[in-house]
Amino acid sequence: MADSTDLSALMRRARQGDDEAYRRLLGHVSLWLRAVVRRGLVAAGRGPADGEDVVQEALLAMHLKRDTWDETQPIEPWLRAIARYKLVDHLRRRGFHDHLDIDDHAGSLASMGEADVGTAIDSQRLLAALPERQRRIVEEISIEGRRAAEVATRLGMSEGAVRVALHRALKALAAAYRREKP
Image (tube, rainbow, N blue to C red; front, side, top):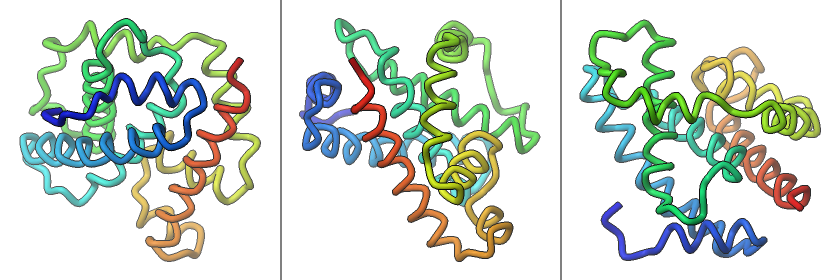
């Protein structure tokens, strides 16, 4: 991220409860993720149509796993690992394996995939606290890998309404996470 903004400092402040720092961090990371995901999809021979779904999955992972980031290290490599993991996962779910050189990144991907049981249980508990419709949207898009358009059809909503509900759910998850953090 060739920005002069110190994302590591923003994340440290956000983890201490600074909502403005967290908002700024999400803004910077969202823009960066969109570019990374777009390039990854194009490199895999795919169009950018599913890009926003991958970005939302990566943001959710960042929300739910931010305690796994080591504050003594720069945040960018941690974010790159999340972005790569979510992009690879997205492409695999859609049957694209040929364009991915997983072995080059196996170490960083493995560390992201080996979440401890406590984190998994906390994530499930936080999801369970969401209103039913928001929970279903987060689960279907971020966990099951469905596209927003598909979820919209399944729930009888517009795609835009699904994206708004997903954004609100992610915001609620982040707020709940901050309240529970010791």
